[in-house]
Image (cartoon, rainbow, N blue to C red; front, top):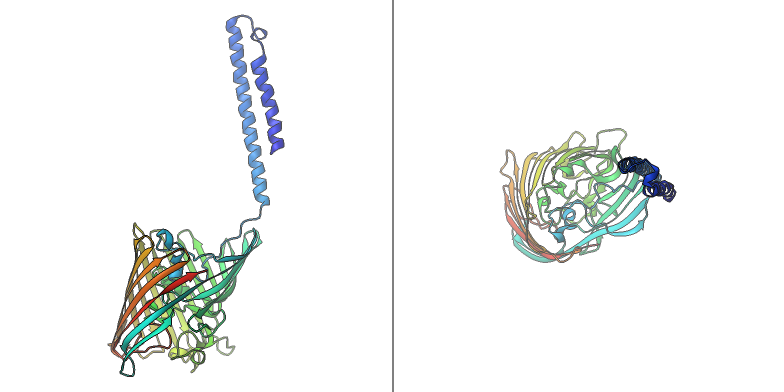
Length: 466
């Protein structure tokens, strides 16, 4: 660049000297003709200077283009970071008054270079819970215990790097744990939340391993309450664990439109009946699949679609879980049985940071005596002062052709002390009808109420991000 400018500046100086120093009497005789000659010379030199300036600019553009071509493209950020669910998605920007964010904090960088990065991240949430209601034994029960409240404590490693121009590799290993006892969550797995490798480029992202299925896209942005020990997960356990083992997925984004597809040859290989206290749960469904003699056993298929208009958005998703054997959780004791969900959701962001959401899940679970159900909900996140937020949730689960239904009311207050620390107080009331016996908390051991009874839970605690 210096050589180019020096070569151009020399003729510019010469031209200027010629224009300034050439005596008028050497051009033409007479004052008028002399002035005309000088003006003509000035016009000519001005034209030449403009040509030289255009040449300099063209040379600079060529040099910049060559330098840009020689620089490796930056590492692309991994889309859909593992820990971005529920409150985790919004916690990153709450300190600035935002009620929704796409990613949680990046964590601690272990490796950072122009071509690769490796980060360690996580959240821990511990609180004191008070529980009250009529238990399945018929007795009025009260208890105070240590529990997590508004998120699922977790840790993870996420890495990505440039392979060749336009192609990035990535991986995510993420596990959950119970801070009250120090045990691993989701069926006792080390990396039960996610464990995948992927490739990303202009075509989108392809991943292999244990990961979120596409059904999560249906409620992810419409569920700011998250997946702690209260919230929508009490009405549908799939909301807290929308994952599948042995999966291949595709994620694409085209402007405001995103889409995802996931296929699994065996959606849950862990036996939760044996590795979890309390009754069987969806943390380990014992449906490993990958059986050569039956290509439908324990298969999962899902697809999701989202439109993000900035201040508003709409989502839709579908998932089908096929059954396995007599040991499989949830009554899906044969590959001929399935559990299907069709999800619709939406959200609206108002001036001042308020966020309103609503959603609907239609479910057809052939492993249940009352297979068809509808789950409706609406939620709100409202900033009420510097660092203070009030959240509300109203959800109802109804079974078709049955008296079974449940109404859930959640209220929560949060104070964001800093970008890493949040204090909270949250309460839930579950009102069951018919033979339903859903608890007001997901903490263990499970406090199952009596059929058709009410139960209440209050948790106060602290959330810390690292």
